Amino acid sequence: MSTNTDLHARREAAVARGVGISHPMAYTARAENAELWDADGKRYIDFAGGIAVLNTGHRHPKVIEAVKAQLDRFTHTCFQVTPYEPYVALAERLNAIAPIEGPAKTVFLTTGAEALENAIKIARAATGRPGVITFAGGYHGRTLLTMAMTGKVIPYKKRFAPMPAEIYHAPFPYEPFGVSVADSIRGIDMLFRADIEPERVAAIVIEPVQGEGGFIPAPTELLVALREICDRHGILLIVDEVQTGFGRTGKMFGIEHSGVKPDLMTIAKSLAGGFPLSGVIGRAAVMDAPEPGGLGGTYAGNPLACAAALAVLDVIRDENLVERANAIGATMKSRLERIASRNDVAPITAIRGPGAMIAFDIVRQRGSYEPDPDTTKQVIARAREHGLIVISCGVYGNAIRLLVPLTVSDTVLGEGMDALEAALDG
Image (tube, rainbow, N blue to C red):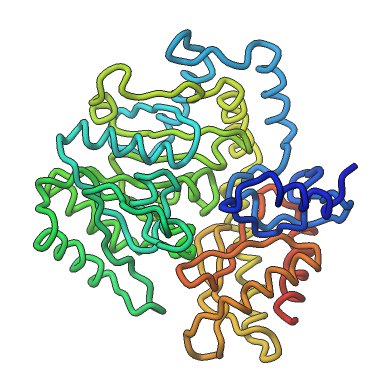
């Protein structure tokens, strides 16, 4: 069997350099729930969860069982050629639980970026307008359109210009950066006066909690204001739930913390428990705007992934994972607050996040906010040495985000937090 060293050498020779890897010397050989083992047999606790894909853990038995059953029936027909029940059944279940005003409809795709691209297509078809407003620090994907929508240059936009037109960015509120909700609203108003009139804007797109931008929750005040702006000007509000969906934030969908109802929602990641599946859910009248054939894709709504997603919804319900997210988050925050009070560890601040979507920032000095991305990288490396997989985020690269599966046991969760504290201790 290949070792980590062997696989790394093969990767260097065979895989494009542009695919960055957070833990290049930990090649996964197998995984169960919130644990994984690398090619050398070393065990890790997984606080990355495939970047928010594994809310139901690695290889949940009910998900595996559902996929095996579907595998025995058929693996692909292309829904646009000969449709099938798992796609329809999953759409029905999501339409019933999505926080959308009135009747809802769904279309399935394959990746989060593809969901965002199609949400913009639907919004433009429904409004007849081209413009899109997103936020600084937001992340929406690596395709050309979603890369333009993303509000972070490095590494996502560097050397890939020019960007598609009619994409505009407003400031996102975050106290350590000195940006308030009022600043964000003024930024949108400035866009309306300086760059694009509101009558040409199809959609405003926002994450309920910014993911790559640093796990920064969107204030309810901002979300309510965006709903009012959209209603006033005939703009559609699109909520990017790719990372926040399916129980991660202590609600089924992150937007539910605010009470605001979007016109369209994008979903992916934990929807199918590790199988590639994404979608757009929205108001039926809006979703029906594109002509037949305008939406879809060869692998969109793959039957194996749809079967997995139906099982994921069962697991979230039957194992009370939405409530579990809140318990996990409370445990993590309490432990992080105790760590932050120590004077002999790397300085951490801004412990935040709803549910189990938790992050904190590593800074150079206690009592101030000067990002320390170098120490952040060192902490991540030390965590791996202690048997813990974590990843960073944030526009300065100094935030560590915690995305443990919601199925984690209390014992493994505590062990992971011990490893994290040891990594911060140096």
